[in-house]
Length: 265
Length: 272
Image (cartoon, rainbow over all chains, first blue to last red; front, side):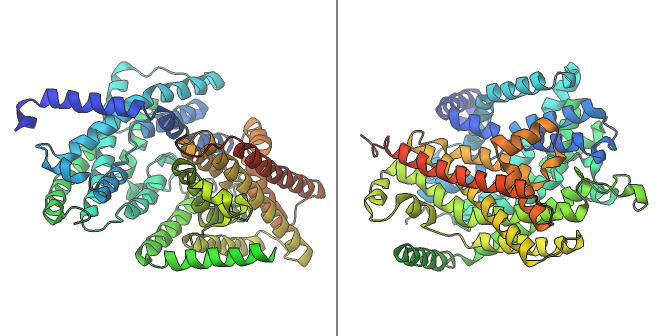
């Protein structure tokens, strides 16, 4: 099998190919980056409200938390279900299935390439943020930065697997992406994108920690912002979610491919 | 005028019939919408309940930019109503403009003996958003009396007028962006940016820092979309505020019409 004999060459070809493709869409990707401005709106609210001061993060802590939340979100955005649904509907999936490579690798490469394209725009937004708000400037400790980067990668992994699970349902229903909207709602409110988890009432926070969502934004963002965070518990939960989701996705995918009868047949 | 009315009825009748073919989707939309509103209320409540759970007590009563919980709920209700209007009416219609430009089918629209802006703005309807509008109205009706609003005929008329002005401004913003696709076919993503920015309207504009408040009033008139109608519902709208909102609505609508005429001069159909 090609993929087993020369994985490095395959990965390089896939990534290079997808990166070239994504560069074509850089104007759109810049707009997508801008449309992730929600954390900044929430930051403006929290920094004015008395409830924000009661969080005990201090004004800089709040600034750094929401900037980090913005960055983590930028590098963990997942759209595999939309790409997959289109490919399945248009019949592009059939040739992919014939290749000696799991199609999910192709989508994974596309996402990583898109993040690389996004990098300069995200950096520009960060630069503007610090220009407007110089008091918030900070350089994370290198060790912390590496940890935060790993946590963001794991967050991306969880989000990617969760959406692949829904994407695999496309084998049964043509409109599985509608389910993604249902998944997005708890993500939006429990991930920490709109409010740090510290602001939640204790009971809600405890319940949220049993879902994957806080590990998608809140945990990596706190790491990056240099706020106190339970390291072992956070990484443990992230790895546990990946260990749970990965076999599920692969199983569902295998069952789905068996049902697949190319569109238009 | 009668011709436009008849056309509108035909357009929306067929759209409804078409959408009811996909009942499961409608159900999922409903569920997502209700959950979304519940989540928004949860986030809003975080500004009012202290995190450590120490409830009650006179000084535990928090305010958001000078607005009480019930008053802020009215703003939330107006936002939900307008967002529902956007997903019922604006998104499906104005999203199609990009496709028309790209595929060149805008030619057929321009040839029809009816105003092209009217045709493009009212061709279809996504009924899933109607329930969101109903939720918004319900929330306003629940919260407004509790916030101390006296629902008298005059106040109600002013509130309806302000809601209409907000809707017109929202429409104009969307249409300006959609019309710019005549030049930049791929700018549909810009509406995602607009959508994200409009989320600021979930909260009263006085809750933002002064600089941003100015921006949200004059540049991106979010203040006129939700805060001003909410003030009117609560019976606090001054004549100056009402006048400003009406002028804003008139200016933005005229701008959208002028911009469409201007854009059409540059339309050269697909693949020239």
